[in-house]
Image (cartoon, rainbow, N blue to C red; front, side, top):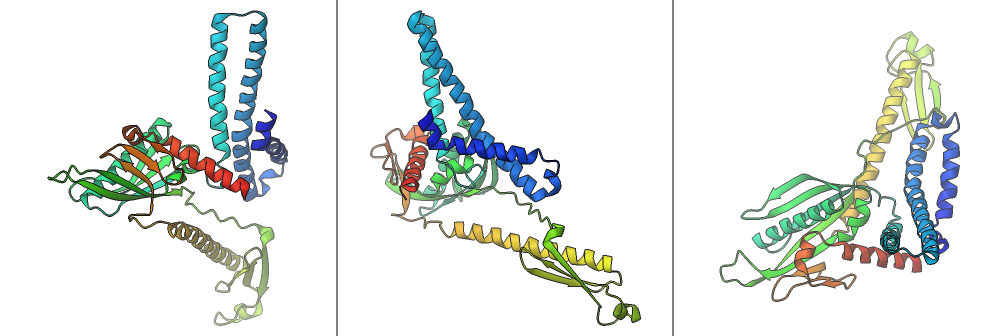
Length: 355
């Protein structure tokens, strides 16, 4: 367990969790709402690591203790039960190791999965629908919730494209391995001459983020200057310092309002202007991130595929990145894509560790 703990850095996670829980116990904790939300989310994430690991440690200790007792007093029924428990624990350890590979900032999020038919006309559109079914079956087997956000029907069969939202723990962390072009080779059911066709469809996966941009402006982050308003408004405008200039220190954004005769009203107007400016800046930042992800989309053409699904003249699913080959095509199409996802994550984790 010590080596396992080192692999997952559980000691570091426990230390961080203890420190954050102490911070939450401070009576002034909720004074900074933005910081408080970040801490609460971080605590939730850390508990998602520490608590399952501690339960696993307890199961291992119990199995070891039971094994020691059975050596002194063998009982066939209890031996069989311990062997089953050992098998379950091994499965849990493998799952925990896989989870440890998902350390990206968005891996814990839900996933938005987009499928687009590529070259091949009706054949490609049918293939896109087959992929949609495959991912739906995969998600359902994991207990995830699938929602169809958008779907465009094909001209004769299948779909031109679809957008699915797949909700569940680490959905994006798993499904990001599926981004790329998927190639189908089969005897086309739409070809009266029963010829072999090659079709393509692209899959792209986004993390689902909170679209409600919450802009919180702290008093300590604002520098306020008052000055005499200029322009029309009579003597009152020119003789009192009713105009307000606000500087948002973290971003450097400056806004000013002098339309009202009341300094308080001008300050409220300036705050609204500042919040709108900051909201727009954050929206542009999120749009830039999405644009960068879109730029990574591959062309849906021959030679760019990450995986080939061959139905005829033989059956084989070949993942070109991991070099894993599985002959049971139907099992894969029924959602059995975990071997590809797991090997991809392992190789990505090994590459990062060696970098």
